[in-house]
Image 1: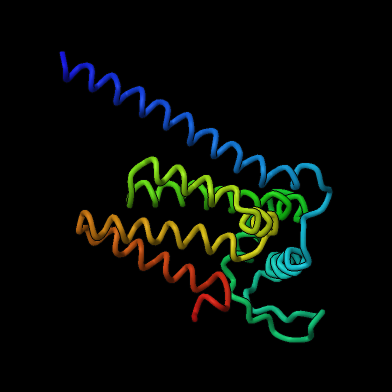
Image 2 (image 1 turned 60 degrees about the horizontal axis):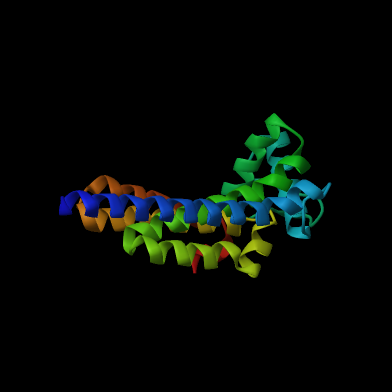
Length: 193
């Protein structure tokens, strides 16, 4: 009888925590996507730079492009640009760029919660995700389509995989974490530091 009561209480707590994380994620989603839905163009001059470089990659089919605007060879790490160039085959570059930043930002919030759930208790993970998901500077940065959004998502994913390796001691997770580390290096010039 006592075990059944404990199980029922535990199920109610889990249901309440699940509802809270859904609310936190819905709020985070709304804060990121509202500007993308209400504005005609993507935010930020950096976004327009990445649209231009990605369009050049799509048109030329080469990662080594000569930037006609700056009259230099583009030396920016290519991961975001290749992703955007591939997505440009499916729609308008400005529309894709308008929603890609918020999408990557929202996915990083989800990955942040998954990572923290694997490191701490669920209440701490939910509270931390609320703080991260509603932090003004994080929200503002995720409105732009920049490599930082992709980098944050990859960092959280890489840490999660490394944490799984330390807990389960399966080399697959170490390989995944290492591969993600390489991908992080392909997102932004400062990721090499």
